[in-house]
Image (tube, rainbow over all chains, first blue to last red; front, side, top):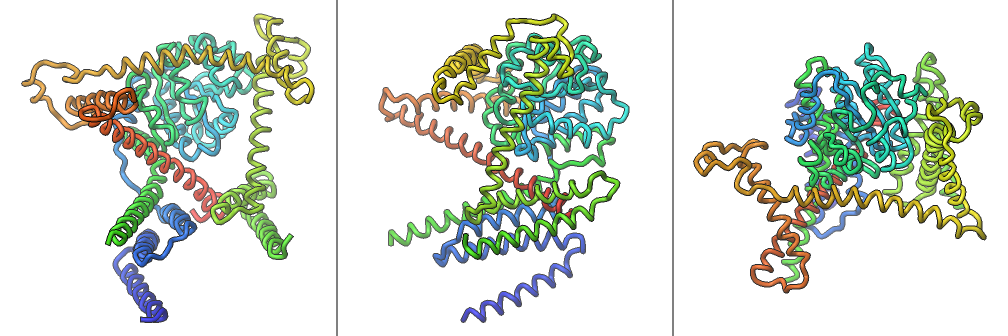
Length: 330
Length: 270
């Protein structure tokens, strides 16, 4: 069969598949089904091409990942997430603290890390405010302060118009000094943070009436993934100050945090999966959050499809490798 | 410069201007400065695509985005460090007139001349820029390294050494051992169940033990010792595999973030 015949055959098969999809699936599912067909059809084509010992250029692989990520964003695929024990531990800690407890949330990340950890930061902030905890927001990253202020005004506080700055929450912002900052606030907040971001002295902020140092807060949640970040909170505040610390980390860092669980950190939210599980737990427990934007859950569709594509490439690569090795032996 | 490069650059500029005009006209005038916002969104999209274009091949747009990112990041961190730490924390402790000038509240404890020490060390650090006095910057650098090492030594010794060793001493016969009968009757497969906890403890114990065997080179890895070493390398490989899986998840999340921006904020398709 010549090349033209193959193209004609391919066109006929494509028309049949398109007709079948249009006939079998409701209109709102067409985008999802076509994108899945495109990805999996492409993978089969790549497997066949590889079996005929033709090289697959790296840019084709990049294109596949792009399609696998973009398609579920345009045509959403959603999954149900059951919180794992490490995520549930953080949720339960915030849930079981008596209303009015003080929680410190540290936004230790930059815009590059934000898509991964911002969803968990928003979800935990909402949970704390809904439970009636007093929340101290801060950051060990210069870029974190801007993201924190934006998050508060654009997302978190929109659902809590009755919350008062300085009474229910406070944003004390960023200070340079990395672990040096933690080393100071573990004994005295005011030495390092004389004012909040609005230049209000800490002694005039009601939340700090009973809080002199980081040791006095009931729970610390560090959200980040670099240095300084969650690990430094454990080393410089959690352990010496004997304060419960939970961490929400970028996926790359998650394996490094597991050795600290459960003795030194009470729970871990690892990457966007951890965020999705937390969002699910929050929506499940609080009907008020039923319509809440859940970027973590939304990201699990592209994540799943991209992982399937990567796994498929690993499998295809191994098939080609073992086939080649067998042929060389013969 | 080649003619084809010029044509590509001209096309990109035209597309940029077109996107800016369309984006600005799509924004509502009451939403503030819509021309500026249109430009910012278009510029952010351009930078995203410029960085992604490296996957095709290296090109001037990628180089521009890369250099801009490094420059802006350094400038942003420096400005934030100056305004949040030097102005708010240091100046009120050094001078009342400077504190008034920068409109920062006075410190309740008053001035503290001890804080001239970091000022002097900071100035010495800048001597690095001088070709003849560069060696002076080694003194503050030595102070920084020494202080950081001293602080970290205590914290790491406590949290990463002693506490980690104590966390490895886990009960291998159940957390509350009351005999085989109650143990069997309480078995369940939940994450917090006794069986799962027991298995986790065994994995921790065997993982640490065999991992240490793998890194013990004073004895040949043969016989039972060799088996332990091989189990150790498998434990390490599984750990690296989990780490790699998490890394892939992280990178995909970042890609999702950028594509969501392109489709949502820029193109408004979602």
